[in-house]
Image 1 (tube, helix red, strand yellow):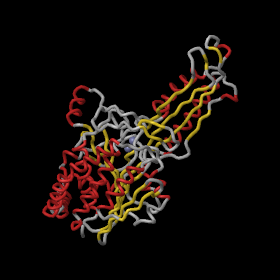
Image 2: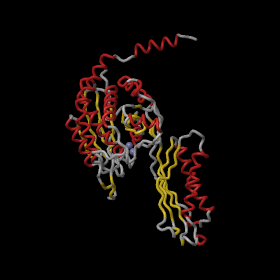
Image 3: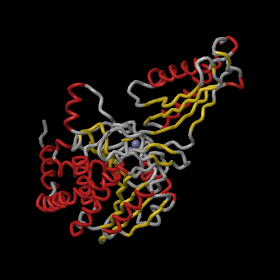
Image 4: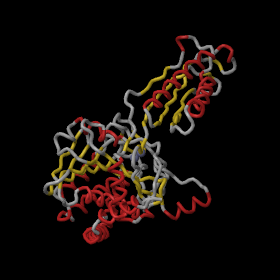
Length: 444
Ligand SMILES: [Zn+2]
Ligand SMILES: [Zn+2]
């Protein structure tokens, strides 16, 4: 065994190791500042949680972000691409870092029973009313943005460059990131050298974090199927073409796309999220409507899923004897929310910073998930801007440990029962985001 490369590597490590003294200084400063500010930040979090707003309707949340950033000396512009808020803090020469937090909530009736649970019934962009809940923890992201802005404003002598804090509307409905870019996010404001964000997730215990070094979130395609038939009396099926039975066959056959058509191990999901058809037990209806979400990591796989859905729907309908003018209608949403690919070098750099600040044990590698994120849009401009979104655990570690033993499922993001544990979740998120910005804007 030749030891020379090993020796060279260890020497390199010695010479490139961070200087601990200066690091410790700013780390302590952030820790103290965050401990002092935490009660006020938790109050902001609870206020946001109690007052969630649906996509494109984030009036109150956007106003809060604008007010908080202005108070810290940021130059703030509101209504960027809709409800988007952009705050710019210039602090000498150096790179520009953009931190993004999504602000919207979901049409879900909260059932957590928390004292600060939402009872809001709010309107969506079309005017329809829904119960509204921060079930994807975007309230922790908004609080995290405000907390990070406070930490960076208080440590200005330790960094040099430009910090841009962005409150983005409409992540869940997809469209917020694109509308902000279209409205000049990269041209009316300093163009970022790095864009970073975090997401609080139920599938990690609070206190843990990780930045996936490559593809992190999936392609999302939305597909609707209208299965048409020829209705009639439930007692006389021979006079009809039953779309309910056909729908059952189609849904079963869709399960074979991932299990039989794709190479084992290729990540893909075909989920039928809604099925609506029929009014009475004794009426065979004329049609059944389905809404699907598709996830994949590859454009070719995404196209394959859609082609297979069309093939299965069409051919099963023909096998059922559906006339040519009653074949299923498959509609694919025009916009594919593309896979979110973290810049590998940036993600590695962030994980290095996290290990230094939190210790190895709290930075546990996580697998790419089939969630979707419109954060991907920030990294798809020409020229390309390196982006990275990291995951922060949200689940109470005691409940996490218990679930590991019993195997009982824990409420996840988008569940009416999802309740992140505020303090460790947000302290980890704010510390991590502050550490990331301090590193990317370190004084040379
Ligand atoms: Zn979500
Ligand atoms: Zn989310």
